[in-house]
Amino acid sequence: MKVRTAVFPVAGLGTRLLPATKAMPKEMITLIDRPLIQYAVQEVIDAGVERVVFISARSKRALEDHFDRTPELEYQLEESGKDEVLEDMRRLSFMCDITYVRQKEPLGLGHAVLCAKDVIGKEPFAVILPDDIIMSKKPVTQQLIENYNKTGRSVVSLMEVPAEDTSKYGIVELGEQADKGLFRLDGMVEKPKSNPPSNMAIIGRYILTPEIMESLEKTQAGSGGEIQLTDAILEVAKKDGVYGYLFEGQRFDCGNMYGLFEAVVHFALERDDMRDFAVEVLKNASSKY
Ligand code: G1P
Image (tube, rainbow, N blue to C red; front, side):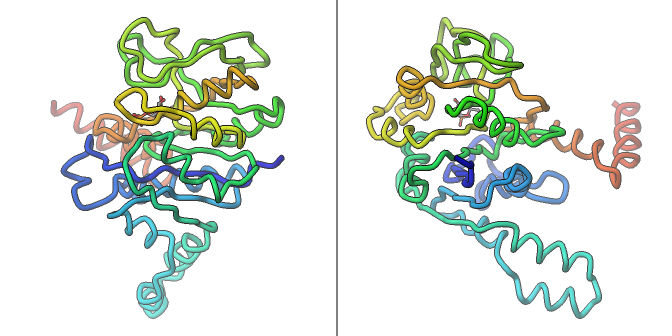
């Protein structure tokens, strides 16, 4: 069945980016000239997804506004003959259909995904954590969808991380290799404090079959006292099998200032309209310090 829907849990407070996120959703932090959420939504659209679901909360109004029409702005741009910008703004507000669901209590990532149950119904869907911005030739969501199409099972994105960082991620135990970069998963544990099963981490892109919802309903609070998506996926893995895919691309953790800065540098260097300027700035800065 086609993966038509992508769920974006965007209810988190973004405390790692304070004070930037004190009065603004973390997903609205900009990477050069557009907010993180726009990169993530563009990625799923490029992968053929038709419908976006934001699992949102209070104080996230700016996200809704960003993807809505702005008649005053459009009028002004039209009057001043800024046709190209006007076109960009219109395209942005018609990018996709967005459904908003409120997560009324911060009970964890698993709980956020469960909030989408009625909207999802009986279809497979993508889950996108927009803090994880991934630069790649082929959108990572598409890479996962292709592997879902091969296996008919849930597929999570994987990346190798340094041993000292395993306690920050969901860590998997790799099983049999099924294809290039594709492994059956024999186990997984959310943020292991000791004895991680490997140094293969789950990154914020998932294709999940609808069975996950039943599993989430039974999942008790786990790591950090929250209902964890990883725990629910493990139960689906035991019953039906779940795959992990070592995606191609470079991931930036834009939920903290180091990852965000690294992303700004790399994205600037990738852009034709920024590259020369960015190289010049970096050269000057490195000769000064
Ligand atoms: C979440 C998931 C974790 C995953 C990580 C990837 O954790 O729970 O399994 O490895 O995203 O970014 P968070 O970073 O939201 O605590």
